[in-house]
Length: 113
Length: 109
Image 1: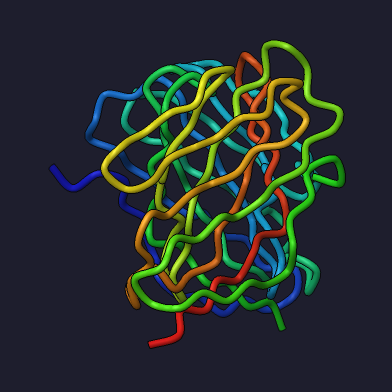
Image 2: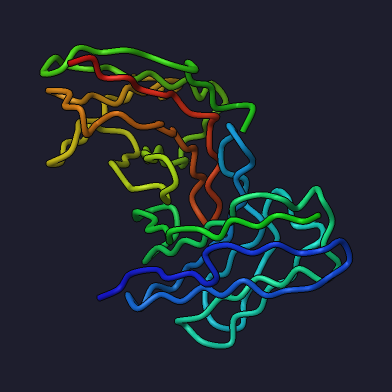
């Protein structure tokens, strides 16, 4: 049982490039989340999903897109990278939303230059 | 979340209890309260959560004020491995979690 896995661990992008951050969970959780964490700050929710085919915006969705075609996978897409998107990105999952614990992945550290 | 406030830092001596406070003055009746902790360069780790009643698990206890506008995470005997940033999260019934800015706990040997 690997829990929540994220790839890549590190990435450097140039301004205007695109990339997809991958997230997979093997706990059969319905809910999945993407957060960003800026240095010395707390977590901000980007997007979340309550099940395959259903996604919704969080606090800071601008500049990102998501899709959820399977229960296991929840990729995050950056279309036109900007320096303001330099951050650490965490994926998380939970069985039944806010009524149950969230389990986090190890994170992806992204730098946009 | 500007509505969830925590002290920036706290210190505790090893093997003594630690009480980490969180204010969530605008909490509604159906909002859950979650606590997570994060070690450097790692993802956050679930600690405990609750709705109205105090909660205990193997890691910690959660004391929720009667009016629910504040809560306290209690580590019964701090160890060096408990040194981390602790985040309180207000979680409205449904789907989203709103995190505070966290309390950095230093444990003194």
